[in-house]
Image 1: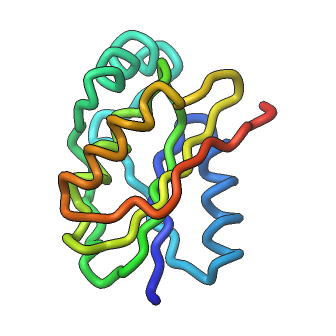
Image 2: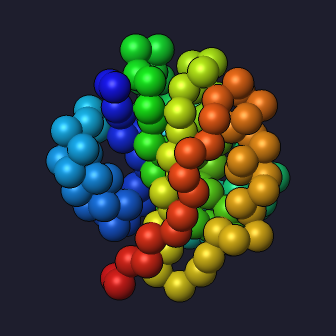
Image 3: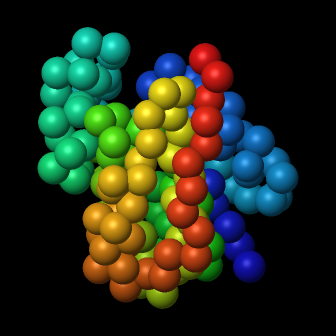
Length: 138
């Protein structure tokens, strides 16, 4: 089964976990880079409200996920929800893909968003096969 690990990282923690995940699985590693980059301040002022509303943001280039049967989506947790580029990655999911959601947080949890994330991915015609948080110690 061809697998891709698709991630967005602001400070580097999610990138490190994504690399390790891709290496462990022998998967392709694809980075989702927002067209309008975030910094610590804009992540808080515009990123958190957009995360709560499950808004997508334009990406610099949209990775083609059509050849992958399993896709691991990874992003940081902002205000209890995946960062907005996560929603952009979800918009690219091919119908029928098996999806794992791995969200990285140093201090928070995505528990309150689990149902909404699952609904978002299922709405794309995909099956959520795993959903968990990863604790970063940065």
